[in-house]
Amino acid sequence: MKDLTKNKIEEIIKEKITNQYSVSGGCINDARILQIDSGKQFFIKTNYNNLPGMFFNEANGLKELAKANAIRVPKIIYVEENFILLEAIKSASKSNNFFEDFGRRFARLHKYSDKYFGFYENNYIGSTQQINIPDDSEQTDWTRFYFNKRLKFQFNLAEKKGFSGIELKNAFSKLENKIDDILKSDYEKPSLLHGDLWSGNYMIDENGNACLIDPAVYYGNREADLAMTRLFGGFDSKFYSAYEEEFPLQSGYEYRENIYKLYHILNHLNLFGSGYYQQAVSLIRYYL
Image (tube, rainbow, N blue to C red; front, side):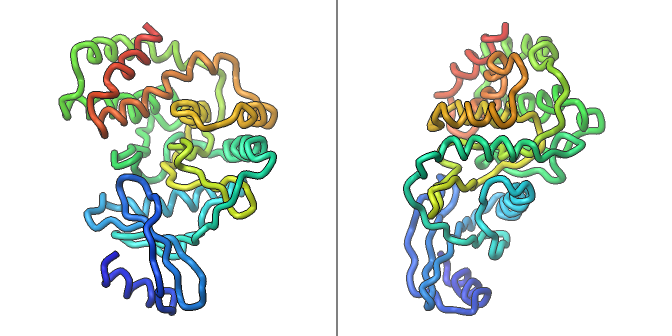
């Protein structure tokens, strides 16, 4: 952490920082716990080669999740271009009913809805820009929004980066012709989504309950959020059964799961390279 940032934080909190130590904060940012004179702690993420507006987007996402009053998120102390300062949440062991409670609360988060798909600003999924502002035709058309702002955006980015081979191009072209049939389902209101919920983007607070971090917030079909939780594992079966009890899913969810996983695999292809190429092709071929 640069001295300029340290001085700024001391000015904000009106106390001296007495100690700091690094913690896990993802591969993009430097993350630290700061301890001050009174013994209180804060959490800070810094990035001096920042993606424009990234920390402001994170703060706005946390604020949006907090509106649902369903799952705890860290309180925002201060944010500017190069850093975000949050409350430091002390971690403990999972409560006995951790995943049941988490599943129910996640379902309640998804009950918080809006009239339109998307969000009032674009943000980031990892270090990739996530396009959330819908065209007029996409505001109430989930299929168009998801295909254009999620899948097609990532595919076009893969082409620009040279990650789109002939297999992927041919498969994606065929997918476009089938997307209406794949996502055909009864209408649901746009749900508030975390947007990037895997096991690394929640923590266990001092009471043994789930706390959401690092969101990529927008309003969309809740199946997209659930598919991400299944992509890399880390969620107990009790999480899903409790979710289903609280907010039952529409029939055919299992069939649509891979189309939602595809967005994140294409993003991983763009972020980390060709190791994700065949998985992207396989997910598309599931529907061809």
